[in-house]
Length: 254
Image (tube, rainbow, N blue to C red; front, side, top):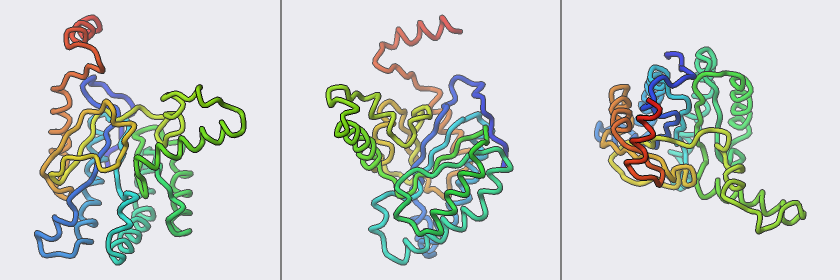
């Protein structure tokens, strides 16, 4: 696994990339394999993507591994996914640490077994001082849950008299979100051919560039990641301004 770079040398490179890793089950079905074989194969694409982030100077990578809605899947598949998650925490965290990568798990981890919860605590503690790529794994995560838990914190402050309801701003809501301390995603990627964000980072994706590929996740490699970066580099991000304003600013800072 290549070491990640903490500095983005190319201004056209996104600082933060968020990915929905879709298509593991379909990849397995097309090969007449059980769905779980696709999830195992998808882990290799995770490794390749982390390596590509290091090579391209991406600072933050957020992967949607298990949504709050995924508990609805067949019980056997959920159990196998939990075992895969546990094994990944056992086998991959050491490699991340060796490469100076910080790992965070975002989401409501209280739904997981005590064994998984302890592994998460251990992994985050081990890697907490690493300064290269910030890797966030969204597990039992939902964008609506993320916004709601931030609002609950603010509601508690209002109830205690520490804050007035009129003082609540988007900035205060943002401060209570799971990724509040990090730059918002510049680029969102979804594999598998679907074109929706599926209750992922609903708040954070407000101004994110969206990129969809028909590749199933186990087929997604460094070349596919680089193609997404090229698409991002060709776009003009205006954030409410005109194209002329953006171009004039670019020339000024060139």
